[in-house]
Image (cartoon, rainbow, N blue to C red; front, side):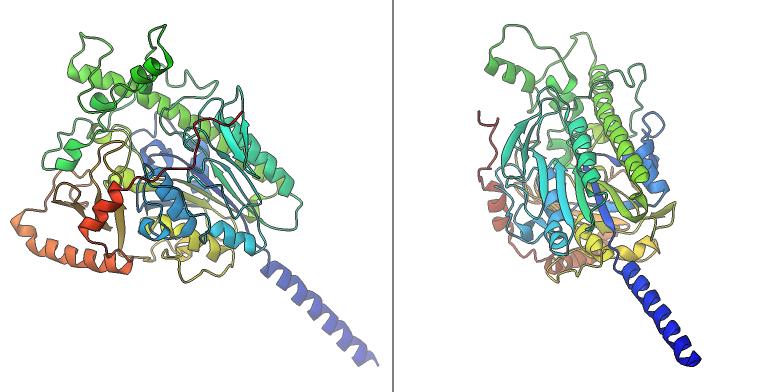
Length: 527
């Protein structure tokens, strides 16, 4: 009798232990995916770039300090909407169909995205902030996304589209603050929910026109911002770079540097006055007595300070979010991701904007924290790509990754940062001539080399040895000693294009650039 009783007790304890173990096993991580727009690595102090000391980002840095920093997260198409589409789908632009902003139509909302897969797996899903894909978000239980100015939204008085396709104008409010408050408010509702959550927390900042929020207008006021080493690049041997309309001195408009317009202008005259300077040959100066270098320096200081003020606002908002996760007890089981839709030029090569395959726009920041699986203070220089977000997040959550996703999970890097995921990343930019007259091009970036083909109305190849020339100042494509290297890299590029399903001819690619498909957005909400 005693033996039977002891046996029943052992079985009962085993059952309870098994049940407890099973419950722990099936506990799904929450996901907080934070994304800004146009955030350069040099403007995140964790990357220790030339702006790190003058404009630190302690809250974004905290994610890396408590997790992992990726040094080679690369974009596949460095422009807002297409990058976001690739992040959502895990597929290249030519596969998901959204390959350019200007005249590229809207994102096909019926296709598979990782939010839909999370929703199907039992997650509560939301997106709050910038969307910029035209069609209303799908795969979300709740959304509130910027709508006016063709999805770019405004820094002040932003208009949002909310669940059910309703438009709301946040009169007298600042976009970063609205996005922060709404995101924290939504998370508070999930605190005691049984389901895990997946929130896309996405800012407009620091996108052009770089309008700082209340309280940030005087940040860095009396500080001279340092200049990047390539600030006065002469673009020798790089025709596409020379012809681009991205120069701080030659292609910034008056609104970019906050020049006050004359009084009594009509609405159209004000628009024309503000945008003057966008195109080649539209010369203006704040002071006729300035030399060329003085004028360029002056414009840089004006614009980059506003850019960094916008970044500071975002960093503080992220700090509030991280504090809430701590206070609510959600931090331990929440994967926190920080990224941007692409990089940005903050004076490198004398430029602003992005689009090129060159390093500053190709690189996206990526910092991740997940206390349960990522040790603090890790870093990895292995090649990963924006199409890898989808399979990685699904993998971490234990959700099956569909075979039609082109990206690769980099989960193993979170425990072993030296693991190899891929040997090369394919890149393709299609938009031309608007907005910045950047020649369409495709190319490949390996751990050491970068091979580029500019093809729209020129036929130019460029090759860079990133080990010897990290700033990409010397195009070595035509050097005799590199004949075999070029041959080898072209062979790998051809195979890579086949691997990603890019089999279009140059004429077909030019037609993709020339296409002009209208977008859904209105300029302002209906009354």
